[in-house]
Length: 281
Image 1 (cartoon, rainbow, N blue to C red):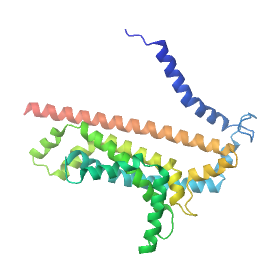
Image 2: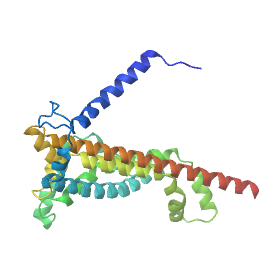
Image 3: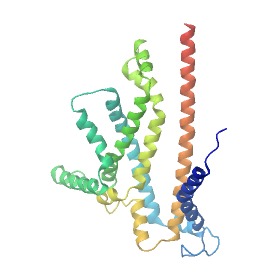
Image 4: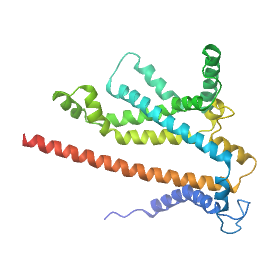
C-alpha cells in the first residue's frame, strides 16, 4: 500500500486551513453580541434579525438574484450555441475571429469591459432611445457578455470529450439533427450545462466593477451595497450576510453534485442498455 508523504499532507492541511479558517471565523463572528467585529462579546443571533430588517440589503439581494438568474439562463443558452459551433463546425471562415470574440472577455480587465459597455449604452440611448437609462436590463446584458465565454469553453471542452459515434449512429437510424441534439447530445452535456449555469450565476452575483458602470440609481446590486457598507466600517450584519451566502453556495454545490451524479448514472445505464440491445440484435 502506497503511503502518503508527510510533507504533502502538511501542505494540503496548510492549504485547506488558509482557505477555510477565515470563512470559519467569519461564520463564528456572525453570532457575536458585540458591535465590534473583532471583539467577542458573547453568543447572539440578533444581527441576523437586523439583517432581515434592512430593506436596502434585502432589495439589493433581490435585484442581484434576479439579475443572476436571467444572466445565467441567457448565458447558458448563448454559450451552448457558441460551444457547439466551435466543437462541431470544424474550421470555417471567420473561426479565429469568432473564437477570439468569445474568449476576449476572459482576459479583458473588468474596468475596460464596464466602461466600454457604459459608452455603448449611452450611444444606443442617443441613437434609438434604448436603453432608457441604466438598470436591471443593462446589468444583465453586461453580465451575459462575459459569463457567456465561460459557458462556451465548458461546453466546447465537454463536447470535445464526447464520442461522436453515438450521434452518428442515431442519424444512421434516421434521426434528424435536431432530434439527435435534444435526445442524445443534450443529456450527455447536461452536467456541463449545470456547471455553466452555476458558474454564470456565481460570477454575476459576485460582480462589482461591471455592475458599477452599468447600473442606475434604482438597480443597486448586493456587492455594491456591501462595498459601500465596508468603506464606512464592517458591520456584524455583513458577517451574517456572508454566512448566509456561504451556506447558500454550499447548498447549491452539493445539490449540483447530486444532480450531476444522477444524470451521469442514468446516462451510463442508458448506454449499457443500448449496447445490450445491440448485442442481442
